[in-house]
Image 1 (cartoon, rainbow, N blue to C red):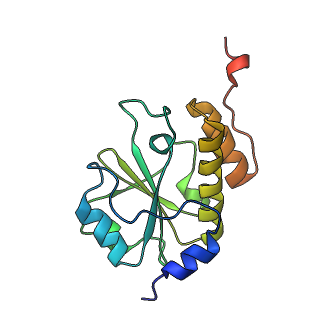
Image 2 (cartoon, one colour; image 1 turned 45 degrees about the vertical axis):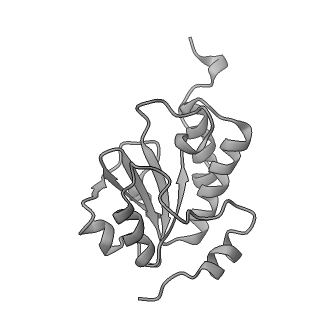
Length: 159
């Protein structure tokens, strides 16, 4: 299988945060990180855990994973992740990614570089703006990824 190269990642994702070079947390086993990396994948910590003061103690660890293959065999098989069927603010059935879950780790796996670039741009914008409320991050991600506004209410509209 043809792997994505670091040169390609640096070129396509220029101006965005670089991918992780090592597992950032105990929640993501070194075995899983190495297996994805060895399969030609690159990953980034995204979501509330990547935004200062946005995560709660119960927050998941979300990682964007880009590979040449939408469902890398390594995720589907030996690592024990299960396909998430949706029900979140993003919909894996939209066709641009698959979401894989194991315990508190969520892998957002895609082979679509444009989707990954938009996802990273939305995540970086959420960091720079300091979006602490989940509802606000959902609104931003849905606008950037899908060109629509979420049903979530803004803080000033609540109550």
